[in-house]
Length: 116
Image (tube, rainbow, N blue to C red; front, side, top):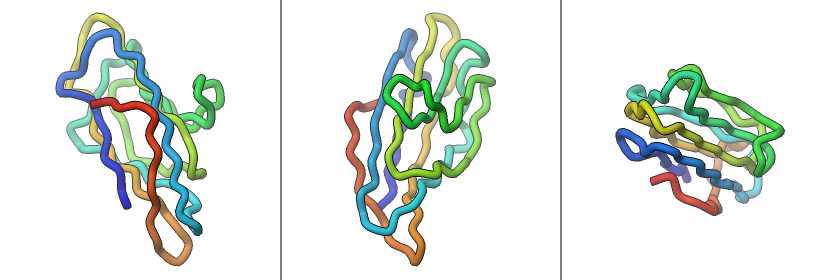
């Protein structure tokens, strides 16, 4: 099944949040990330990163230019990191994680933190 996550609107100053997601249903090969069209973060100072590791050193995709966009994560276990500074806090983001399997199917998730 799909998982919906996001920030408050607008989001808080000085955020530093990391979440871990694992889709464990057999046959799941990737995860689709779909953003709400209103989603936006502060350019250059706030960062939304998807990575293979908890520290964010092995990135899958990074957004830091204000706008965000839909994409595919080529794995079933990954981290989402969000950091913000202490100034401008625009709308934030809402996204849906949808597991993708060959031949259909859905997955479960294991989150270790919560953004909202």
